[in-house]
Length: 97
Image (tube, rainbow, N blue to C red; front, side):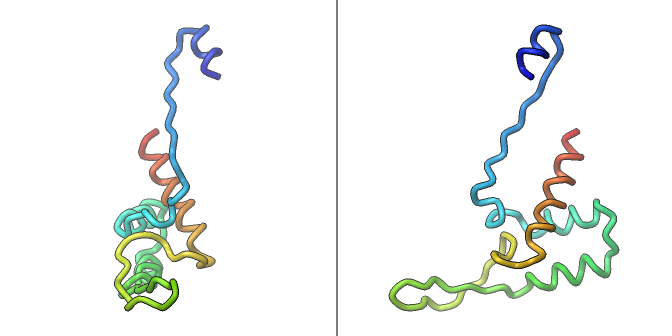
């Protein structure tokens, strides 16, 4: 594709996104913004965001750590997380276009 555009002397833009830790790094406010931008009704946005209020986790090694608050990222293993991630990525993509 790069060669094709180069031959025609057209501009081509690339964007590379590292998705390795994608679920862990999606800011909650970006999720809220993306849902609103996608046209999701506000009552449903509030319900989705309520799942993340007060979210806690613990580290398990030879013993469990004390629970601590998680303020960023989507829930690992949640059925809704892949859909939320796709919505976030789609809305960001639309904004960049």
